[in-house]
Image 1 (cartoon, rainbow, N blue to C red):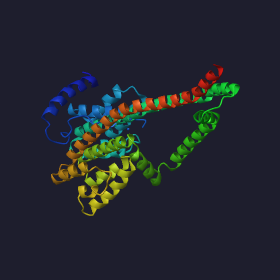
Image 2 (image 1 turned 30 degrees about the vertical axis):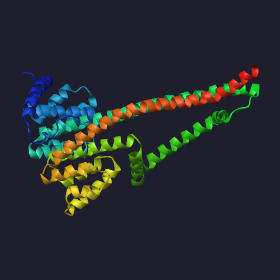
Image 3 (image 1 turned 45 degrees about the horizontal axis):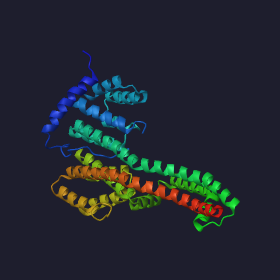
Image 4 (image 1 turned 90 degrees about the vertical axis):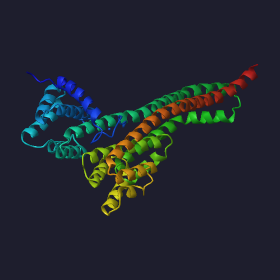
Length: 383
């Protein structure tokens, strides 16, 4: 009888639901809701599906070699299929799953360590489940960031087009009328006309600044001074600063939770998170925190020295450290920060929408008023 992947998935999901109802303790019992993060040629969507499928099929009682046979049969994407075939070949040769991933450029050190810990602890299915949640969270994190940036970008782009049209075409039409009638122009009209006459210079200057900034970012983007300055400016940016802070806090907490629940040592987990968190203030502080822990300080004492971590987080980590439940605390903190980030994204859009509309209306209105004041004088003169 032929084994069908979709049938196994359906059966595994039913069993998984029943299992989750009885899992009041253990590696994954700490999360009661999805994490919102919003993260390759082998991207987050594919990894989320891969680890989810592996977890379900492991729970169904299949071994990894059979699982990858099924994944290869069901896969339609050529490159993705080649990755699965390469892993299957390694498994047949006697390599462990983690060692196979270690040799593949498509998988991170973070995944390799997590899978290795899962193999050593006999909880590979649970680690795969957590990895699926992790990548699902990264997908949601990217959507959050896009949701926060797309609308303002569209509105500002539209505003720039409207402004360009008015200053390049509408204002010169009024200037011709003013010159023909030799009317005395008020100050605000002179300002708008001056801007219109030099608008090409303004555009070229803006373009040059953007190109220069992009070049500096490409050239110096990985240097510590640039990353430190960029992070400092980002955190001080209204609306966006608190949002990005919460997103990176959620990423840090959820990453620590996954590694600690995979039974990684605290110092090893900090090392890995330092490499993949992608936010300079956290990277810099985590290196110092690890050094303090090696010297004998507790984790909560070490982390409390840095203002980038909220006091509430430090207090909860202290409790978690005292009762040996750090991974649970990190999981709950990750969920809280992710929820806060999602709430801030929604509030950001609701605040920016009227602000941007008012801004555009004010700019357009100012230009029109500046142009029509002299027109009234012309009308009075004719009358």
